[in-house]
Image 1 (cartoon, rainbow, N blue to C red):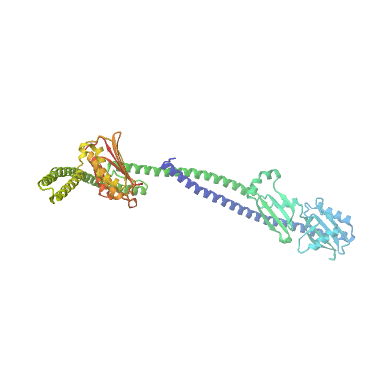
Image 2 (cartoon, rainbow, N blue to C red):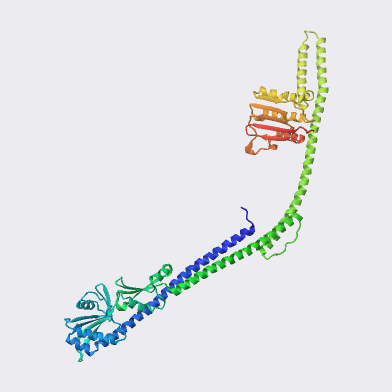
Length: 569
């Protein structure tokens, strides 16, 4: 799939900007979570201090009520009389006279503990234990002004007072306080003093929950369950003034903070969307700007290459493209100079090659002419001289007697003349094969002397020569090529088989010479020029005829010459 540069840069810029935007959004989300957590814990801490202050205020009011009760003369008199009914009636009258009764139970006991009475509000369940048992549990737990103690399954918070008569003589003891366990009313009253809306408040004693209050009903609580699961925080405060075992636990859904969280999340989403749109716009602008500069640069290069001169680079807003334009002009100008120099050099080389070919062709032509001339002179002059010597020798034999010793020398002279004539004839054949003019190329190749030499050395010679009508002036060159190739095979190839074929294939003549010898040395990257003067001469003759030469040297050496039938020299 091919992408335009504009599309590619747009996608790259968009992905990069979206990556930065995602990192920013993630950091913002985590920061919001930490801020909300810290804010919630701070609010719960302030709420716990406010609740503790409210509890202390409530206990001070209870303390005031109990002190006023112990100061009543009627209470002192009934304590001395020991009448439980009278004491109950008195306490009930005092409760009705007060607009609000804050304490929930009172225990009155004589000094000898023989008389013990329990008075409680109707809604307070102190458990089935007797008065003396409650009194004993409180006495065991007393350590400070207000004391928390367990009475069976109930946990109570109480304070004791001495009851004296008119003479300030101690006649008994009064213990009063409130119930902490299962006291949702007290927790509701305390929760109203919290700084923020809290989801729940719990009291635990010795690690066991004794009272719990939820701010929201169950239905509403379900609606906020998802929010509490994500951001609800707990804050635990130990109420050391009542002992180390009493703890206050606050849980808050922080409606205000949660509303802020939702608003921040919405703002974050809107900001992310706006950032995405802005990023897309910025990416589009940047990609368009780069694509515009790139298209401008491409047109500049095209015009510069087409015209070959500086068409002028218009300065743009991107400095790097301006520098690239200048560098491209320098490069293209240098390329044009080099191309001009290369053209001139190629012209000179081509002219030199043409001159070389002309000289080579003239040399080959002159060589053949000189060979023909020399062969003709050897045949005409030296041949006639040798014939004359042979005739004179025969005449000499007739002039001497049969018993003359000169006859022996005469026979030797005739033999030497025959050998000289055979040698001269061989040289004439090497210079200009007579059969080529009389019998044609096919028979001339078969009469090459090197073939007999190869057969005598044990080389198997295979000839497949068709009677082909050769283009004018090419037969001598093909003859010389076969002659030179066979000579190289005999001298260098170390072959056991040699094959020569000549045939006509459609509009071309094919000559093939192959052997199974050692071939060319490929490890030395041997070329035609490195193959010796024989292969070089073959190559030159092929160029002279306009033929194609193919050399293969895998299993031996193979020469393949393809000559168009229309070629003529």
